[in-house]
Image (tube, rainbow, N blue to C red; front, side, top):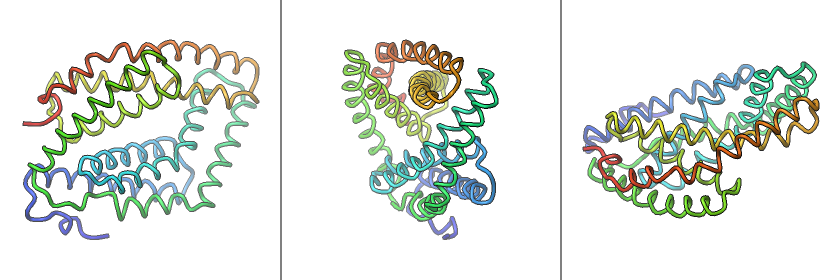
Length: 272
């Protein structure tokens, strides 16, 4: 791996240098965490942290306009998606006091998924992608990035308008999932630049809350499918929780007028 200083071109100004240094720190963290996956059992917090940091790096690549490498980060995040979902499923079963036999079935699925990832050398592929392609290679000054950020804001605003209207008219699981991914992208991209004002923090907190509601519905839809071999008591509980989460998730598109206003306000998106 190249020395960090070699990646920071002298033409870059203060904001750009800060972004690259932060990205290098995320890169280093991901590589250390992937090393843990290679050498020991896959702790849920490690898998979650890898995916989160890689999404942040993906968001920065998208801000730089590096679509190819951003897609590469996304593909590698997805390598861990099923393992992460199964780990969350296990945590859910513990929270609802599922019986040991139910947990054993899920443990077997987790073990099988881990073996599949190891056989496919998924961890090595993730490490290579993060090592070689996670850091923007452009040397543009701050002005370029601010212009890119403004362009991205307009794109989010248009896409969100269409997604919100479609999901409000027909809140299918697929549409709500796409809306959730859009919220997640907005959240991570704003974190790279946004000013730490009370208004900004309130906006980010609201995005995280709604992202959580949509994510819970998506998770429980999977749990409902995976729980068919589990005890009747657990299946009934999953169905009850799934119905509640679906009801909450379907209300989200009608609660996003504030987001459209925020995306239309330059001060809430682009730093001064």
